[in-house]
Length: 238
Image (cartoon, rainbow, N blue to C red; front, top):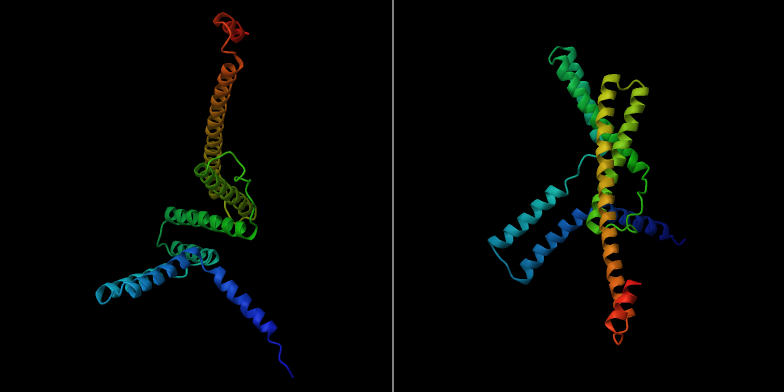
């Protein structure tokens, strides 16, 4: 009976692709650095202390940057545990009410921010098409950062409202968080509009300059040089 290994091969290929694409760009750059150090040693015949230092440096960088970071859900769980620990200390009169309130507020802000990031990962929304805009690369990058920050602030404000309506956030904390987010949204809208105004102003100035140059060129080409000076002046006035 012949065995069909096609399914196993496809699963293996799929797993390899997942591993390949799961590694970040930073990880691949560090691997490339390690390989580059090794090639330096081989081709330039570096020996002894220099070769050892290069390999140790590459290995340390790999350990530092390839160290797994806690996921958003793990960060959220850690903050929840911190809030519970603060509540225990408050009930045992180990911290005062003001300190406990500040810890709760800061943790609520962090939780709302992480929840907004999780929501954006699960439901990615495409921003406006910046590639076709008149903005240059630097301003386009800045505008994208502002739009992403605005999207994050709007999500955090929506989550804060949901927590307040579900009685998971008291009114005092909700008002403070809402005021902070509304203030930041005003600042972001101002920065975005100013960026567009500056770009529009530059485009208009460039357009006017080109129109003036085109107008001068047409005048000079439309007048016959063989005409008398007085006739040329009358045509120009017309």
